[in-house]
Image 1 (cartoon, one colour):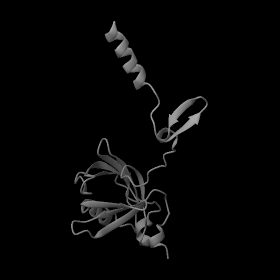
Image 2: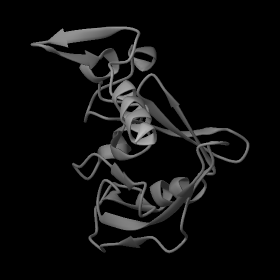
Image 3: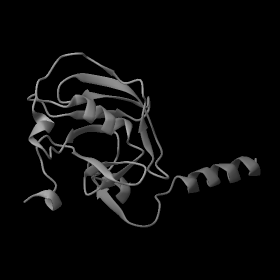
Image 4: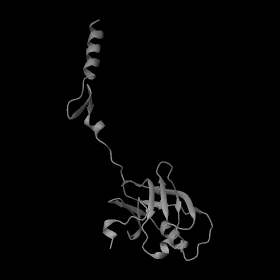
Length: 162
C-alpha cells in the first residue's frame, strides 16, 4: 500500500508546472517556448528558389528559372528558364556540399536566344551551397559563385542592388 501511495505522489509531482519563463492563458500555464511565434525560416535549402538574373539572356525565354528542393526525397524540380526539369540531388548540412544528378530530365521545347546548355552545365558543376541572408548561392569545387537564388521572384538581395 505504501508503494502505491509513494508512486502516486511521484506521478503527481511530475505533473506540476515547470519553473522558468512562462505565460498565462486563462487559468493554465503555458511554457514560453509554446507561446513564441516561430518565423518562417528562409535559410533552409528546402522549398522554392528563383534565380537572380544577371544577364538579359538569363530570362530571354520569358521565364525565370526556378528550383524546388524536396529534402526528404532528395528530389528537385523547376524550370530552366525555358523547359521544365526534375531529378535527384545530394546535399550535406555539415559541409554544405550539394550536387545534382547527371540524369536531369527536361522537356524539349526550343527557346531562341536562351543558352539552356550553359544553365544546365552550371547546375551540374555545383558542388557546394551557401545560405546567407535569405540568398542561396550555388558554388563550384573551387568555391566560385555560379548563381544566386532568392525565395521571391524578381527580388534582388540588398548587397546586389545597384
